[in-house]
Image (cartoon, rainbow, N blue to C red):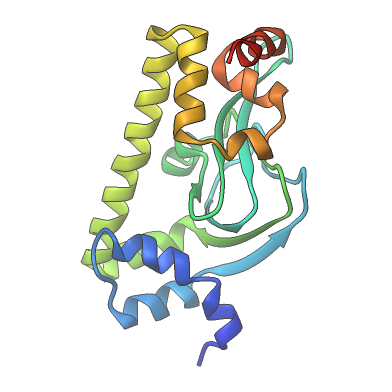
Length: 197
């Protein structure tokens, strides 16, 4: 029997899946049994370049970022993730190859962690859970495509406005330097854009 406090950490994860396809109680029990709740502090690297990603995380509380370093060692942020979102190094997790990016916490975090082999077992055992996993993968792939298209096709000001409209909490929880990097602009340019508002 799972204790109530531990199970309460899973409520939002189960809600996310239920929005895609109703989860049976036995699947919920299996997810709890095949995952762990971890608490980590701010600025903890959950994955570094060269490591193989074998864990997917669900953020119960806190915030994290995914970034890489260019040849000169300059950081470029590619994702910011918050409560009720999945945290994953897509390329390394799905290919099993070494990561070219870092995953780092921006705040103290409570995370639900599932290893790749356990996730695969759950997908094989419960086909409806497999469906939910596919729908979530599609959602994150679309999000990534939107971001890539905005970087290619929109002005810095338009990218900033879209980010502000989509995710206003970002500006309260993430440094302007990180946001500028994500938008593909300098911090000075971001400050100028913000002053024009």
